Image 1 (cartoon, each protein chain N blue to C red):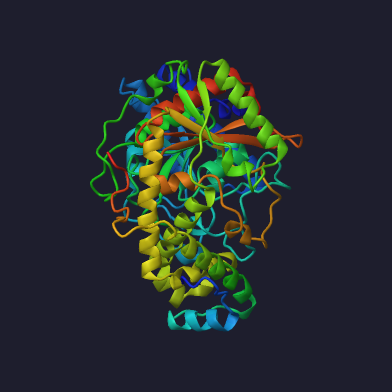
Image 2: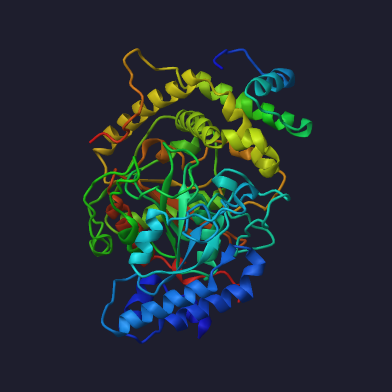
Length: 466
Length: 63
């Protein structure tokens, strides 16, 4: 029974909690037991906050019993990427640099989840400062992919968030995304991961990687669960200079509308000309396009700039801003950073001011071009990664700079994008695609993702961890 | 960084890092140079179609 509870979606658990057919304490205990039994195989948590979780669960249970139900996140067990600050709870960014960092305040997204009544199970591992890669000298072992813990890398950088959701150790999690860090691990772990529009979700209290490109967003088993979580965390925050004061729709309600007649642009040229994906990934994408057509969407090939144009812009901006954030510590205590982050981070200090400005000027052109092109479409679709999860390695981190990724495009332009599962390869590893929307139109891509998930069998399969 | 023909040597990168107040272990220098070369190439390419009046993306979502 406990295992079954841990595989409920947020959308399924909410009505059970509300009607008191399910106890928030019982649910939380089921997750804590499962974490105790399973997490040693995948290392998704860096800190389990059992006492706090049970206290919150008890409070949720009492409130619901007294008729003060807060909404669909009330009593739902969640985890947070350890880049997101929590008052009185250690927040390390998975780095020795912040090994003793206990924030005095919650990030805005944490406050909003608390107000929604969510139960915090703990802090989840990630790549160091969202930019490193696994190396043997880090304070915690690298997060493993629950679909094959011995083989699989989880992508990056919201590794623990994706792994814990897939393994049924949390019902939902928050991640952050500067070049694909929500969508990439969501793809490798077979879950749904939503990067909202820049400005839609507050970054206040999220340890920065790159101010211009950072997003915070939900990661969950289904697109529907992402919609429920987004509803809780979205909205203007005067404490985030990048926050946008834009109307928030009812995301879960938007899922009920059909996608018939929607115009969806298909982007193949990113990978067709120079960078072929693995066959199984490509074939799963083509099959997904057929599903969308059968659901009534009108598909049309679309061409953007070459992938490299976005990648060049992204890498100059993000590396310069990352170095600016870390300059003092990189000079004074370089040895406290993981080996694989050191050689990545230092060259950011050599980028000239004029190169950074040219990248921001180029970015403006790319943004305008993208929004102009989007006038003809409701959404666009493309691959999320070139293949399923690669083999875990702790000594080959240079791939980050070797091949433009398929996700950073939309960090540069700020559009919302969601990664969803499109099947499994012959080794049982998940395959995925990403659906991209117009600025502040997360509702449309969630609706497309939900419609696809409803007509395909992929949400019925879980990792066989016990 | 925008010299078309330039491939940074280990000596040059070491010197640039030193000027920026940074040091790197010798065993990591080769990888660091690869990253520097990657960034230099990106910086060269991204200015290809910029015109005098192009503004930076200070507020990047146009509404």
